[in-house]
Structures are given as C-alpha cells and as structure tokens.
Length: 88
Image 1 (cartoon, rainbow, N blue to C red):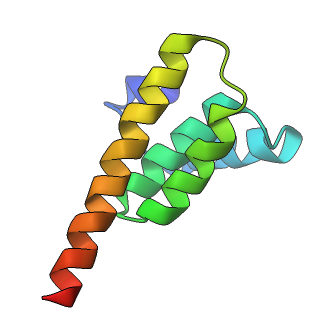
Image 2 (image 1 turned 120 degrees about the vertical axis):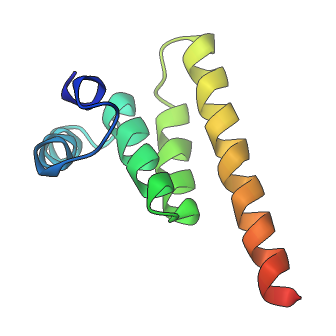
C-alpha cells in the first residue's frame, strides 16, 4: 500500500484514493480506518472516532476489531485530556 510505502504519511494521492474508495463503498473498513488515522494525526479525534465506529461494523477478524478498539480508546483519551485542559 502507498501509505505504508510512504512511511505511514498521508499525501494527496492517498487521500484521493481513500475518498474514492469511500465513495464507491462507504463501509470499506480499510478506507475508513485510514481516514480515521489521518484525522487522528490532524487531532480531529471526534471525526476519527466516527470513521472507526463505522469501520468496526465491517471488520473481518477479531484482531482487526481489537486494533480499532485500541486506536479508538487512544482517541477517547486524547479527547478527555483536551477537555480537562480546557476546563482548567
């Protein structure tokens, strides 16, 4: 995959391919997972969680489900940290 070949960095080509994949199949868990990772890197944790929640319904194995749950928990922790920073 281009994403892995580019040291797990998103570029315009990857973004375009992910968006095209989601246009063709909005429940494509691989594309949703990648989109969520990109949103996470952009610190858009709520949006990342939305994509991963949809992906969670379409994963094929328990390992994929576990991996998504791990990143979702990380995003939730980031949101909690941000919430605590803004209330202090």
